[in-house]
View 1: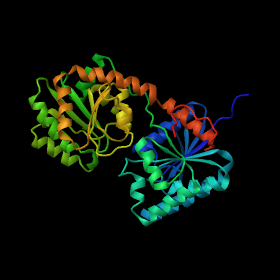
View 2: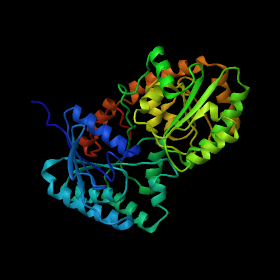
View 3: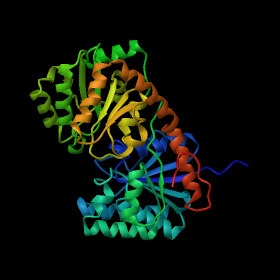
View 4: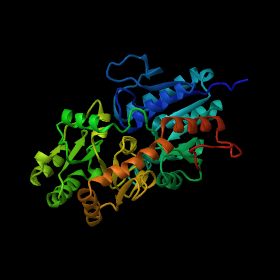
Length: 396
């Protein structure tokens, strides 16, 4: 007889069409699990006049009532979620919560009462993520104590976050499962297609394209990166171009840095793009100069697209990038090392393609959505039993 399908309810405070990093992973993972035959549904907050119930990419979504904003929003959504999970208790075997906020507390409590498996995926980078932030407030510390007491399974995407989880939560079960990437959507394209994409985007045909995709926020250190890139690019024998795709509070600072560096004609800050895969496919080098990072969705998408990585030596980049083989890494805030990495790409335009090929191989082998979905299915089934055999990408 074939095994019974996995039955999971995913919980996310926000969901499509709101798409931050955690929300994007929730949608992609839910869709991948459905393709594998799992029965997956999503519970999220009702916002912006969106329908109470709908189906997104084959995944049933229920949006629950919440009131007000701030603490009232959090408490009311957690209460509604607890009632929903109680009513639906016969329809799922596992609860998967994205991020360790108030919904995770409600899910952990219901999981304990109902004997359900609960998985809580932690978010953020070490030192600046949700666990560190929670530790600095009284309400946050109460939340951490509740989660530690009710002991769901915790998932961290990097070794750094595994260590941080044990620092703030104590001797809980923490598994390392990476983010996943759709290696069919994000993939290299032939040279003619790459040239056509550059023409469409208004990027130069013969330049080395440095690309950032994501939120334009202070911890990414993009304005300073732009200044250093512009200084090194002026001295390089070959031309280069820098594009930053995204939105956020540092957009004006980034544009100002490019203007002061006299690089406006060799750069672009176009805002978010609906078809961001076109930007990856047209680029050569993906840059991620963060001071702290989890496992960046954008980094994995760029690797899958055949871009070489140029990233600070923190968080997930340490694990995803094979230094010298799929990308170049530098210590955060070490401007001398960053300049040396920039010069290697600027002096040898063929280097990016060489490293990008290896990056694509790594993304397909280690980070495909199918591989990650299989790892989560093993977690849902094991239910935290120490004797369970856990395979794939799951590591204690």
